[in-house]
Image (cartoon, rainbow, N blue to C red; front, side, top):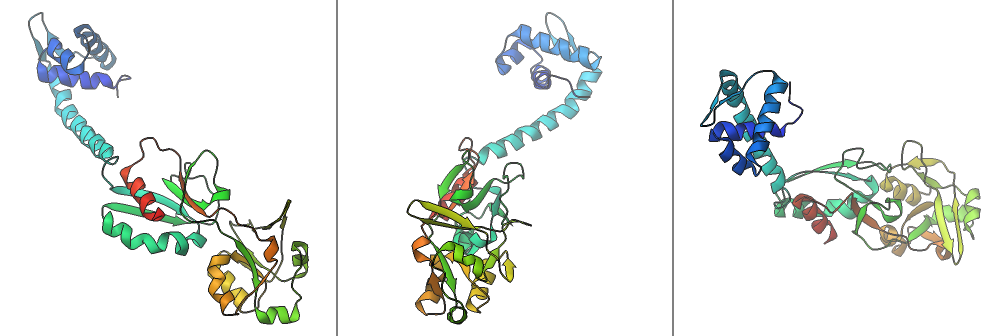
Length: 294
């Protein structure tokens, strides 16, 4: 049975070690009467006398000796653990759980793993990849990485990449048998490669031109949750793909892919790392943010 007021155990330890209510009160930063009241409440709650006291001295009863024998090492261990936890705000060490979509790995995280380990060898980065938009707090993550438009407003968000620009691309062979779409609605007559964010959530292709904004739920013979499969599908003529311009730039330069609807493809926010609050932020998370931003 634990007492309802756990601070009474700390006060008992001070009295037991000091053998004086007055010295214990100075150690605890409270009045002697407060110490006396706390000890009386503790004894009443456990139903046994722990201290034998007179106006001149304080001694432990047999029950008090037994409590001290188990309480002192337990509180010492708790104190050491609290010290280690508090040290995390100053020293980059410990485990950081990070949620990241698979399509952000190569662009944001993978190139920085070596530097992170070299500069902060005591950090354990525990990475979960999931394209779904999840609640990082409810799911026990310290931070997440995602495109800016998908991050909740109550999160602290730190930019990791520049804005992205979408590109609608297809292979030259595909366009030999399919006319280029002139506006987004024409995509309904094309074979398109769908990207899945979650178990059943397919990305609606979003477009903007001047004051016009619209999204299109495309159809096609391929649904994937990996960007490499999107690229390969487009290169092999499976259908049109919605991708980031910078990721397919080499294929466009070599003529292996061809763009469409370029005037409808406006920039959108790139990747950010996000977390709940800056208060009591650990040094390990600060270090990870610094490396990923570099």
